[in-house]
Amino acid sequence: MKVTVVKNVLDANNRIAEENRKLFDQHKMFVINLMSSPGAGKTSLVERTIVALRDKYRIAVIEGDIQDTFDADRIAKLDIPVVQINTGGACHIDGNMIRETFPAFDFSKVDLLIVENVGNLVCPAEFKVGENIKVMLLSTPEGADKPAKYPLMFQESSALLINKIDLMRYVDFDLEKAKRDSLALNNDLKIFEVSCKTGTGLEGWIDWLTKQIDAFKK
Ligand SMILES: Nc1nc2c(ncn2[C@@H]2O[C@H](COP(=O)(O)OP(=O)(O)OP(=O)(O)O)[C@@H](O)[C@H]2O)c(=O)[nH]1
Ligand SMILES: [Mg+2]
Ligand SMILES: [Zn+2]
Image (cartoon, rainbow, N blue to C red; front, side):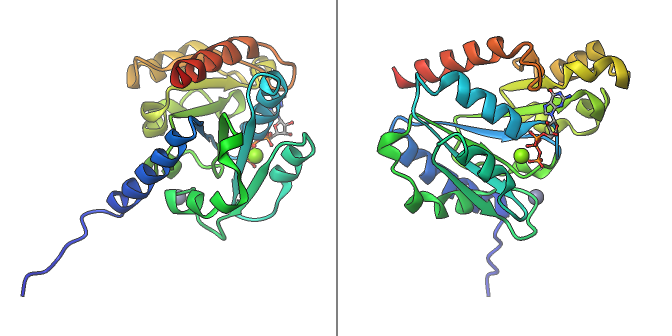
């Protein structure tokens, strides 16, 4: 009897993510998979990005958390369509979870979908959800050694926002090392130094993102 081996749970996820991508393409919808450690500032960045771009694009958000709706409540306050995924323990979002949210959205009315992944610096980078780009945050209190210790997310992302720049002097964050090690892993990585608290540096991120979205929509 021949034994069938399913090589990899990631193969199955990749297929679902590709189907999601086809649907997003039909709607010319640009999708960001936003990742970071817990508390690095993902929801703060989503809020800032919404405020900066809501007059230009129709935005929707999917919030992934192990439990509760704190983050979705923050987005709903901005009057933006949002769905909360509670993973019930799972430490990342996968393609299937994203598919489950589809009935809640009218994608014909969305230009930009932001998926805020579960706070976790490891496996979210392994699971595609159908995104155009992966974007990650590294906040200065986490330390400049993170690219070297958690390389995959840095390798997979198109943009890295080094957040909480306002705290850098209190936490001895070695900015040059963080940038050097990140670029050693991924030479194409676009790096922005920002504070989602004060707003410092966010215009560079918004300009770059606008270019990505407009190039995709053309
Ligand atoms: N000082 C400072 N605080 C920030 C900055 N960005 C976010 N914070 C604070 O950091 C905390 C966590 O921010 P969130 O945006 O909730 O982080 P998150 O990555 O969405 O967190 P999870 O979804 O729980 O993983 C909040 O208290 C924010 O106000 C920043 O640039 N500087
Ligand atoms: Mg959050
Ligand atoms: Zn996980």
